[in-house]
Image 1 (cartoon, rainbow, N blue to C red):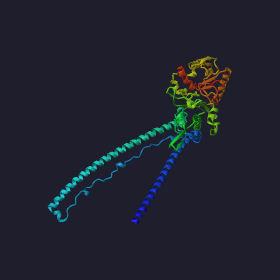
Image 2 (cartoon, rainbow, N blue to C red):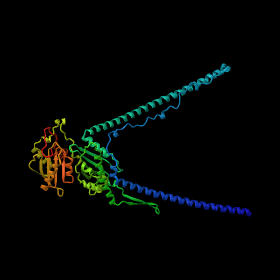
Image 3 (cartoon, rainbow, N blue to C red):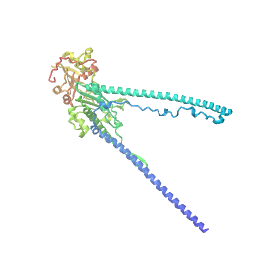
Image 4 (cartoon, rainbow, N blue to C red):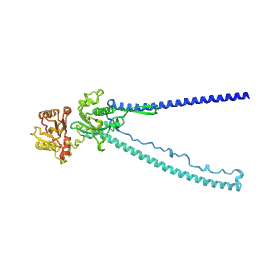
Length: 520
């Protein structure tokens, strides 16, 4: 009994030790689980912080990232090859062979047994039954095979149509690319505009950039006007600054990014995008089509006051290739660089405070007719180049009256244009305006712009407007940049006449036309 008692006590102690060991292991396991759980939460917070920081850094590096790539469009790379899935017939592959009679035919009796009537009769019955079975199996096989062949043919025909559609689509695309390449090589205005729309639209930006671009090319001034949709403030700039995991409450504590930082970052993004876009246009212009670029940056938004869609311009700048070439974009401060280019930038881009575009995209009339256009002989619209100096003066005077200015016509200038002193009656923004129009065949040079600026100063005018039937050179735009002056080309003049005076005109320069003045 004593031995048995000792054995029982030993068993109890072993059981207690085992229980304690189990409890220690359970506690250790629970502790490990808690450690792993906390580590996962800390990693989750760190991941969110890294994502936010990556987003902010990518926005701060928009301009440097754009400088590291060649934006030139290779027309050959715009071509496509037909794409379609390979023909899949795996489910229609035959897995069985046509049945053979030999597999169903019963074995013939052999020897003497084959001569016995009842053996022979039994064999014939088996053979007849086998024939019926074989015939049924053969019919089923051939029915299935016929259906398989029809399905196979349908699948092949459908795939052939898919291939033809893909080839036709690729062929149409490639023909369009080739037409664009040929038109671009000839300097066709629409093709040139399409090329630069493609350049800006294919530039890689972070998520949140709509990259919707419109452009117009004015060959008479070698000027490209770009309307570029910028990202909205709240959709782009992170509101979150950092995330921290709080162990005691098992929650994440978020730290908001100061509004001043968000606004500063958005202003920087707008400036970088404008400079990067201008750089990409000039950098990709291997044929030298562009001397001057007007960049207008817009934002699609909702007016908080009335809930209606708005599309304000928040940055506008005009610059020339030569002026932009002198800038070391790798080391500029974007906002300061735009200021040096005399850009107009919203005082509060985040709140979409608008600025007036240097030149609106739709202020150009695509019907500007170049010399030698045969179709122009069929056009019944009045040709501005056929008017007498007096008629042209009256036309320009009436135009700016229709635009809301109080005009005072002066004596005709010797170049057949018009000198006009007008008054803008608006308070604050209004004042005296000096207007000069030149009917020119050749590009208007910088001397005419200087003359107008001198006239402005002599007259004490707050603004000067120079209108021409041709275009302007880059030196003219460079001189006017940052000054209260408007340079309107022939295409702009046609648009304004139609828009404000309901005059549908054209510009066809006679072959014997000779420009008068120092800008010949």
